[in-house]
Amino acid sequence: MELPEDLLYTEEHEWASVEDNIVTVGITDFAQKQLGDVVFLDLPSEGDILNQEDTFGVIESVKAVSDLYAPVSGKVVEVNTSLLDSPEIVNQDPYVEGWMMRIEVDDGGHAELEELLDAKEYEKLVHAQEGKEEVSDDDDEEEGKKVKKIHADDEEEKDEEESDEDVIDIDEDED
Image (cartoon, rainbow, N blue to C red; front, side, top):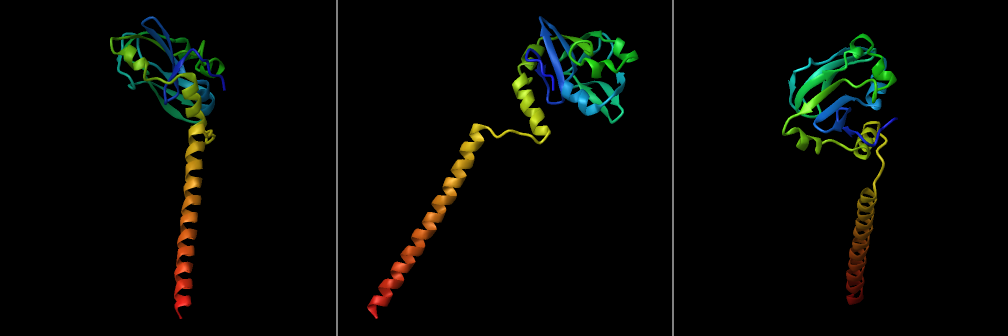
């Protein structure tokens, strides 16, 4: 899976490239592979005002129809109209020729960019969605604590059993 380090990503599998106040948006390599052959795109019009997470269009493939979501708020300043006639470009080159729109971010847009995922975070998301989530060191530590706790509980039970045996032995000595 191709995953450029210099882009930001959404949990809905859009990417965002930031240059000054302009954010270029498309779908990720992972998304286009999941969709299969893209056969139709419905994109916004120049001048449309979008809020973060608004639906800005629809992508249709041989497998599914999916909504496209704006990663930031702002005004659509350019649309890649070549995709309307040749939607397969999204499959062939999702990060360069397959960009979908450019948004001029408004005042809140820069703060919204900070909410997006970097490449490493997005890769973890994809692995989790594929069922290949890697166990982190933190998980190992937690798992180790659980195992230690189980062993400690077992030892406490053994100590209690031994205490019960001691009581029985004492009772037997009194006879």
